[in-house]
Image 1 (cartoon, rainbow, N blue to C red):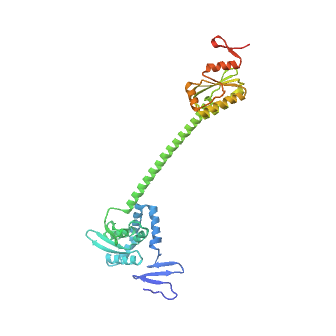
Image 2 (cartoon, rainbow, N blue to C red):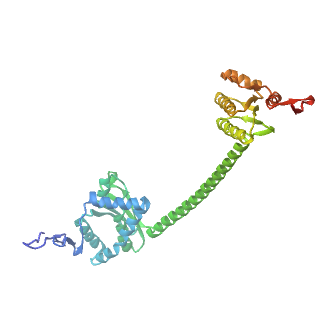
Image 3 (cartoon, rainbow, N blue to C red):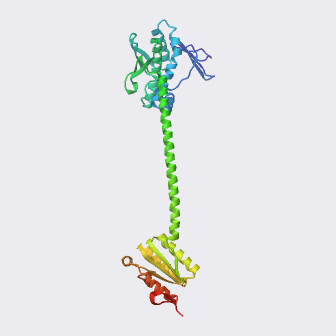
Length: 366
């Protein structure tokens, strides 16, 4: 009944309960208790979604059930004001319907078995979930049902939902009966399991972090060793040996790559200046393979030696290397070459004025 008077704040009664507004204050009272209106399919649905995302599926349902059950203490005090439990439950139902919570009814009641079947039409949780297109179950109201009948039967009860509006049923249906299940214990179990998983995850992260640190350390050590090896190879990879006054020999062994060939040029030219060398023999007897680019580096080195005023010769050209050079079309031009080191030494001694006597002992010519 509308009891609004002119210049008075709006006042209505819904099922005998007062509904008052104070527009100037922005407040509303329902049954003399502060209240608020929320659009079920938008604002309320968004609040539920936020709780669901934060709590997770399993904890979400238990948290809403727990809160619904806790709120039944005041409900029970209200119900006890009526002649019978069913009268009080009916009054609670009228209030819930008037507040837009939906309408519930007792479909089946077995006092002896302490078993009840409750049906809920237009439950606010279902309306919100239909708007979102999700199926999370009606938990707050099921907590209410379990709490009311736990007081009534004086034993712990649990409400199990078995029909769902969000699945196309005309109503949400719940079976309320005695149970050993306790919401608090189940929440504690979930929290304990999550805590254990968190500890396991932290332990796993620590293990993986330690493994990664060890791997990084090993890689750093390996890189350091490789750098040291690279420096060592660079130092001994192209040794320059003075075999006689004014005669240098560069023994090349293994595979010659671009890096070694470039280093050869730098080292040889530096040693010629430092030792005032007149002849340089580049010995490739121990070289495994030779490609066009490396051959070009060698020829450039020998030409650079000539520009410094020294003689150069390439010695130790094996048949395999010679065949490779022919196949690749490598032209040595007018560079001096010898098949073996002995021939190269004879050439070098000749260039510096040394003759070989019997037994090939070098003697300086007078």
